Length: 291
Image 1: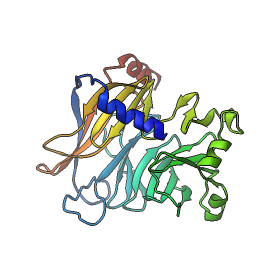
Image 2 (image 1 turned 180 degrees about the vertical axis):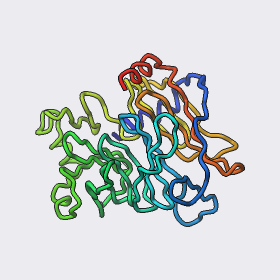
Image 3 (image 1 turned 90 degrees about the vertical axis):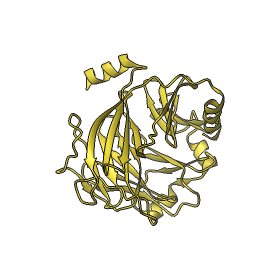
């Protein structure tokens, strides 16, 4: 993964970028209130992370985690309203990292990672007290393996992670052990997952810990810029910033649309935007036809 990461950064630096020929549409506004059923951003907070994190799963469900009071919301797929009768009360000040098919992944700290069941909010597993800083994670539901990377891109694994420290420690494997266990012809090859040249492959394609994959396009968010790659070449670069608003979060929909959440301090409101996938419109049309 380290090699892939540096390749991506090199492409950012040296590749000729396609012009930002995209349009952004405002789809919803939310009040700024520190209470259940609302989004909140405290611009004066000097203590803990504040604001809201957004993630989208493979089925197109949009989740927003309100960090200050620790509530996870889902949005109505048509109106984008917060489903106020269908939210989960979690710990506050977690870092919302991933939306898997059946689980949601959070960082409790840079040394801890946990996953909860989407529907019940029940804790699936919690892996903590690791001896390295977690840079990214991927939980493969098919094989029941948690893959983690450190700041240098080395890949670690916890097989069959649970909410049990002793069992997790026993099933924890360092990068050398992980690469051996998940070799191309290893014991997990029937799960279509393996590691080669410090890169994780899923179904024959490289899995990018740092972004999203949609129909051959790889989306990589760096700070407030979305980089889109096609066949490892930089295809499009989209600036998600605004001089008038504070960037909160962004996520990629499985149809290829990009959703952006920003806070307007003057209006004291959160605004959800959408950039429509016009670079692969056939895929977008097909996805909505099938869903």
